[in-house]
Length: 393
Image (cartoon, one colour):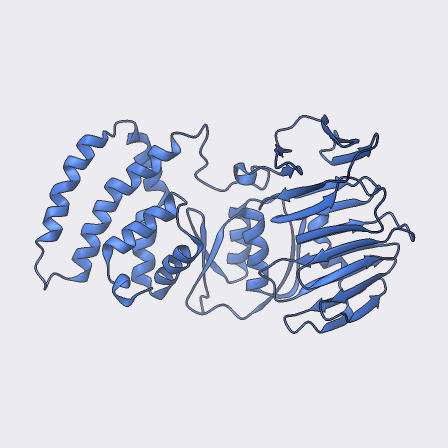
């Protein structure tokens, strides 16, 4: 971002408007958050413009907005800005830009929201799931929302019946012959999902994760699935047809096994943790390690495989609906918070360096999680979809 943009109130208004309307690119959002985190003044400006209570008040009046009259009110302000003298202070520019933005940006924001059937203005509970669906994508590109689908048969493809159980699991059953095609199960932030593959293998997918797999394994030399994010596997072992999980940077082969893989893009290492049986982990260099229950492998950017003892209770807590922290830094904790509550995390000033321990249900609200963090000495402020974090030290 150019230095001049940091001082440009229209750049600020444009980026905050894009933030409210979810139209910013990832790089533009990073630029905005960098500007917000620069100092307390920028943070105060940002919070004032996107203040949720004010937006709710504005929403009550949004039905009265008339686009033509709004523009007639805005144009004189644009003319006023053009004739400002050079010595006009930065704060004056900000005040005018903020006023302009609140007139136009808020209008556009609520105009977009009114086109939706329902709008949530606060993140309340993991059960709400932020209006995101779990999707099954078929080989032909068709997407099926599993969130809204009733239990029962969903579709049949190439001799395979796909159903949703009463417990909400995705179930594959081979009913006839046909070619092997690939499906992808995608789980958004704030949710978890289970799938029972055609061989009886059970997979628990964590938030912000996806799994690509064959619709059936008959006739294949290996049962190969591809994972992004995190999942727990309870594999039906078949020595004649090995089960392989591919992630970025590694491949895991089941040897009669239950195991957890954490392969999120924003984690520094890929972790594979064994709870039962044995697995063989292979990195991209071809190095392999076979681990026993209670052990885990770590593969970092240098691709070296590290084997160490694992805290299985902590690592599999997500599968049991819990947060479990033990000597973890705040960045690790807030990455989990971000995935579960679907919020962006922005640090104001230095990142807190303390280590934390604790346990909580994933059914608590984001507000309750913020209270826990506050009691632990971490100040947080929720503004729209962003959690700002400040070290009180």
